[in-house]
Amino acid sequence: MPRYNVHELKVTACFYSPLADGSKKFEIRNNDRNFKVDDILVLRAWNPITKEYLDVKPVIKRITYLTSFPMGLKSGHVCMSLEDF
Image (cartoon, rainbow, N blue to C red):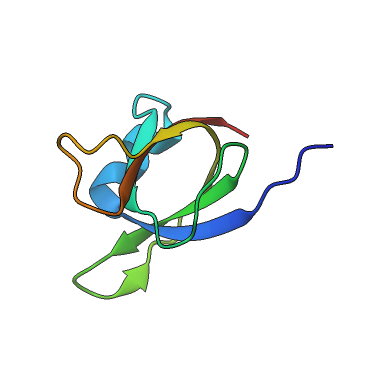
């Protein structure tokens, strides 16, 4: 049985639909949670203007690959490949 952590994350509303329909297969984040392959992301649509969650079902993804390759990423950030969970 794989060991993984579950991370609940805010996603700006404009990125919610591409994550939900599967056309966006990655996420770039500050690695302040020590993300690992097989961790689960619960991505909740967030409106940064009203500071409220949208009333839509969260998108749940599994991290399949991640890299902190420095070219093009801010220090401390990772790019994570995602698949449906």
